[in-house]
Image (cartoon, rainbow, N blue to C red; front, side):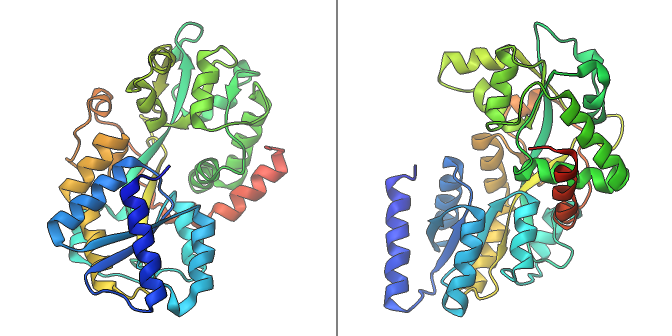
Length: 340
């Protein structure tokens, strides 16, 4: 649920659209991120620059289609979304324009930038393995590929193949293992599933805690949220589950991004670029890490006790644009192996 201030900004944007004009001192965001931390980022941006933020929230695909439908009359300056697969889809639809920024190029690693500057990643989400502390010895597994071992038959919980996080995970495996290797992995996971894919990432963690499965796959920040929940029952779930960041001795744990790009028809392009540059600032990066438990894109910026406790991780540095490029083949692999 969006708070009152964001509602006011949404109303203000609608009024601007109705008036047929765009203020020079604003930036219009279309965002598929629905986190309280982002509101803090918007407020910090306005405090620093004086530029007002107008916000429209929605599903990634719905926002992409809205921008296309609005055409040259769209007030959208920036599209914000999660997962490189969604950013790639938006780019394929012609939503973004290239941006050349010394600040973005120097602050953000190459792996988190579109090769031609169409979009940029500002936070990282690591795809981890979870295990039941009471019933499973974590020494038995260290790599993502281990999930396919016959000894884990009937022990794995994971989300549906329609989930973009899983699609991007397999897209990364296509790059690392080849199409055949990625398909063998997907088939092995299907063979070892404890139940039909269902629910979100938090549901997979809860299933491990409840003993429905010994192993599960999910993004790291869902676990961090449970650890920091105000609900004692949530914290107990987290305490009964352990986390493994796989492939630490090899390519590193798979990482995806929260990212954004300047819309091709942006009426406030200069402000849009300033907003992207602000997302790469220490201020915004600390909010990503501190409030939503995402890993910052900028190295050396980390103020989160939970993330700090996990130490210096080896993170896969594949350029995340590849995750989008390989998405269609990942979906075909899911279909071939019967991953629902």
